[in-house]
Length: 435
Image 1: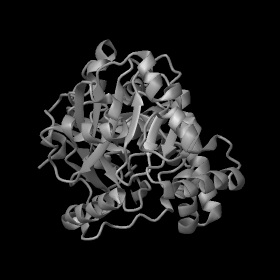
Image 2: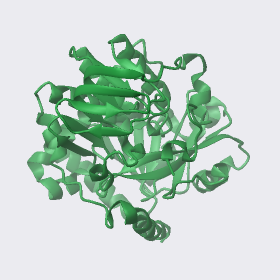
Image 3: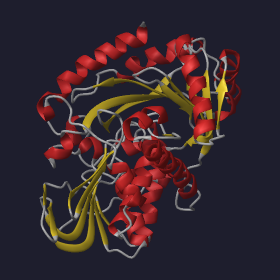
Image 4: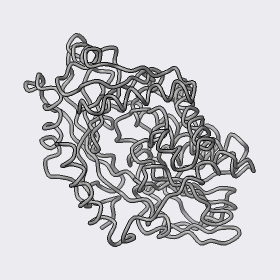
């Protein structure tokens, strides 16, 4: 079963709040790739990473073709919670154990740059999405609070990062009016954004920079040669470089990457619009929130005052038959005062994860690069990955090499058994969340 069409129709955006809200700001459909084409760089995938790669390459003077199998922003880039998180997906003390303090510092710097890039790009007249400041980390168990506060001090002392502060139970309850949390922290210079509007803005910028964009152009094969050759059912593209930005929708395009990047599904609901006063009574100052559960609950408000709540995961191909009911349950555990509120939209999406939740950057060949596995942290990191692609192809690979040096191990059992084994692991972590 093809994840591109397992839960969605060919050539159509999902029935998400983001897609419906795009309205007049949606893009006209781009043509499909046809015939024999040549370019400097062929980018596969029209999400944050692919469009950012195409944009930054074109700005450096490269002739770029971008191929998207569905519509631009169709995948996780246009469906996610919109949180622009600070730091890497793994915490810095974990990275210090994994790669050493010096490399962990470099990874922290790169992560900081990713948030700055999203904030800067959002200011373009071609991007119709506002960046809102603040992400709260909320601890769902009292025993987690001490670690959160120790981590705040570690970032302040070791990384000289002053954009974070600790929250005790009372201050967290003041900011997030839920009985579910015991304390935590706030990243004051992280934020949130409408992800589909942001990715469509990247597409406008890429088009304006001269990128040749093709939709409904599913790549069937990539031949490792010099130059490389990329084929769809109706086109053959010859390119000096190929960039793979497929994330959870890679399928069988490259088995080496598929052993390290696994697709999982996640789900989001949007409530009916609430009054500004009721919004403020739930989450003050329009911050976003993510909690400490392994299967994370994450939530924020849209610009028209809907609570956007994400949670629950699945590891098979198909989405649940009633996504709204599945996600409404954890929403009411966090905010029982919303029992009278209607759910207007519910949707699912597929993202790519790695074993250690760090992105997988790799040169598959001298002229073929793959960057994926952003593990729910892709709004910022996938966007920056595109900028890193451009500088790497231009001959400056320092940041690429820092990211690629983080070990990304194969999922146990390879492609065939990664799903069943992960289901068993997730059942354990889900049980642990409840204890």
